[in-house]
Image (cartoon, rainbow, N blue to C red; front, side, top):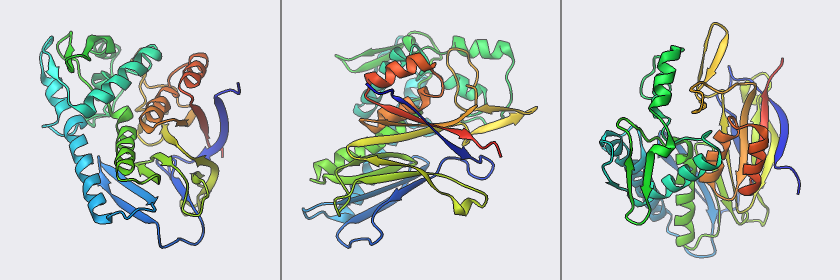
Length: 331
C-alpha cells in the first residue's frame, strides 16, 4: 500500500496571501447547460457548480441551500448567542441536553476523531482558543504558564457523554465548552451535497470557504479539478502549482497563515495542541487532506498539523485519506 503521506513543496507568502487560494479548473468554454450558485454563510462564502439531465429549479435550490445553512448555523455556530451549541455551553454539569440532528452527527465524528487521534483533536478546546485570542476575544498574547494549565484543566473530550440512544449530551464538569468549528465547513459542504443528491443531481462541485466536495464529472465528462495556488511576487499572478482531480472525494486545507500573530519574532498559530495548550510548530505552512467526505477531510487537515507522523499515517490509512503539505517560502 502506498504511503498516505505525500509531500508537495510549494511556497506560501503569508504576508501577501492569508491562505492557500483555490482554483476550480474546468474546460475553457463554459457550456450553457450547467449551473452555478454562490452566496454567503457561516462567515464565509459558498459556491456550487452542477449539471443534471433532470430539470432543476435553480432559484428553489438556492433557497433550500440558504435555509439549510441557516438551520445548521442555528445549531453549531459559536458566534450566535441563540445557537444550540451556546445553550449547551451554558448548561451545568450532568444536565442531559437534547441534541438536534446536525449537532448529533458532528459530535459523533468529533468524538471519534478525538479518540483515534489520542486527543490531538478535541472539540472542547474552546477555553484554549479564547485564552490565546483566537475566539470571540481578540487580545492576542502569550498566556502565562499557569493560565495555560488552567485552560487544559477546563478541556477534555472524555468529559462529554453522548447518549446515542436518547440523543442527549452532558458534560461531567462545569465550564466545559463545545466548539466544532474544525469540521463545521466541511460538514456543511456535505449537507449541500446530500441536498443535491436528493434533488437528483449527481454531478457537482461544492466549495464552502475552501472546503470542497465533488461528485461525478464536469459536463464534458472531465474530472473536476482543484488547483492550489502559490503566488510568486504579485499575488494576482498566483497560479496553481498543485492540481487535485476530485471524483467522489473531498478536499480540505488547514494552515498557519490565515490566523496567527507574531510576538518577539515567534509566530503563534491558531492551530492549538489540546494536549499541551500551545500552538503547534509552524514549520509546515498548511496541510491539504483528500478524504471520502468533507467533514472528515476538514477534521483530518487540522489533525495533520498536530499529530506525529507515525500516528498520522495510521489514521490516514484507516480513513482512506491522503495529506499534501506546503512549506513556507525561503525567498
